[in-house]
Image (tube, rainbow, N blue to C red; front, side, top):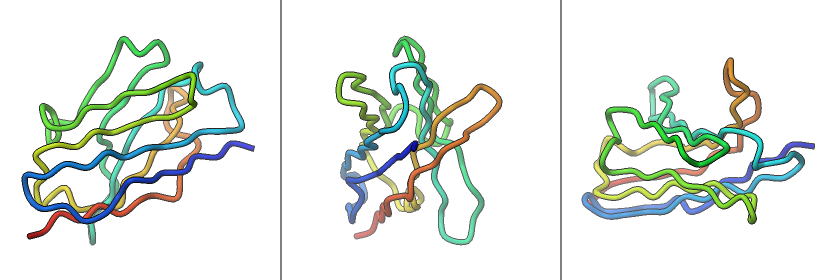
Length: 117
């Protein structure tokens, strides 16, 4: 079955960096676009970034553009999110999810990112 397992979350100071990983299994990872989304405390789900299966295309929410970088290693079935210059407003549970064109069909369990001094 499809499984997505995030890791790499934790506590970071403002201006710091974290790298999230998402290990995928149960499907042909290289054939699917993959996204990151997040949910801050008391707020709705926010889409963060997407990377397409051929790696050529990446898109970002305005709130993270220039600070976050999405990437993937199809040989390792792993999705990444490099987060630099973190801000307190980046505090959220971060999820990876599989794209099916019309939306996101499978989600990981999430990893907590807290940005605080």
